[in-house]
Image (cartoon, rainbow, N blue to C red; front, side, top):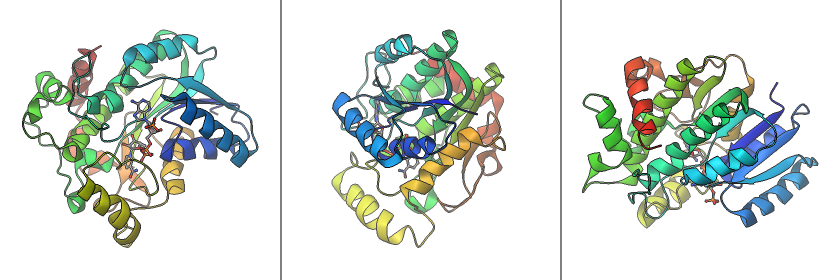
Length: 306
Ligand SMILES: NC(=O)c1ccc[n+]([C@@H]2O[C@H](COP(=O)([O-])OP(=O)(O)OC[C@H]3O[C@@H](n4cnc5c(N)ncnc54)[C@H](OP(=O)(O)O)[C@@H]3O)[C@@H](O)[C@H]2O)c1
């Protein structure tokens, strides 16, 4: 049972709803809300206590796009944690293509680099006991109906992954809506590689599915945001089984860490052509996800920036 859980990006959207659902499980003892903004975290903490009647939330300040803040946060963590939910991320803020001082794009930093640093640090200090879940997306294997292409890699070599993480692969053509899928693909492969490297910890990637009512699309250009967030997600996509409530999205994360049927090293997301309903092993849709060489190359590539 996971008694102590840390969730990144827990002040809003799916992360906050996951915290709410986990607090309603009576065995849960502590939930760390790992957020980058203290004020937002305090508001979320108050609302979560009110919604669940349980005062079990502790705030940890970290920005996953800034590895030094992640290292500091882990050093300040007094307990070990049973479960880690790497939820923070999205389309990379207002400047997704900009490079961080580590040399990756902000899109890579906020979805992936900081989470890899977080796992490294937790393991190094013996502070991760059972399970680590990475918030992936069906975009990692392409979502045809939304015009999100399957990442089209030539070799899946270490060098190619480096060029994805530092953005050089997309020079002059950096569309965060598309590149997002490539980063989630790289991150998902990294998790599968870590699953083999650390067999005592369960690593899974889980997509929440198409989830309404979050801030996830707020940084996209106006027209894309208007269509996807306000028209598509609310009106058209539910009819096409392409979006569900934030409760359903978060439930996938809650089950992901607690249900033993989910196996280490696997990427779970919706069946092909829909973004709702039961999840399946995505390597049944795209074999590359289960290629150990590709997985290890992605993991080696991200470690080069640490
Ligand atoms: N919604 C969907 O349909 C969908 C589908 C597939 C996958 N996902 C994935 O699910 C996760 C949650 O998405 P969401 O829709 O709930 O998004 P959201 O409403 O935008 O929430 C994202 C959370 O992450 C935090 N965050 C972002 N960058 C951060 C950073 N550098 N350091 C620390 N915290 C950071 C945000 O904090 P601030 O409030 O400070 O910005 C916020 O708390 C993301 O990884 C997303 O890619 C979402």
